[in-house]
Image (cartoon, rainbow, N blue to C red; front, side, top):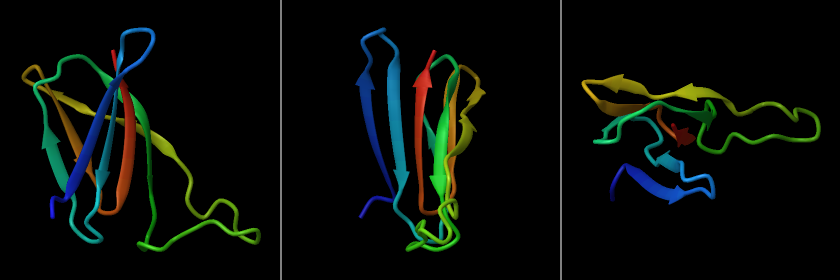
Length: 90
């Protein structure tokens, strides 16, 4: 089973929207692409695979800012274990 699932779509404005999911419960992953530009968006993850918000603790996990690294004209995504990243590429 692959560790990372990736989906790409093009928005009405022509920009690429990329979502990456690291399915591993305990292993980080690095995805290197041939995409150029800047990629910024949001990441969500939690301390445990089944972490969730409740009425008593509604912000146990919340989205946080995320930016991919640019290395030699390529975008590199470092994904913590059990994380979801959605970015727009400019």
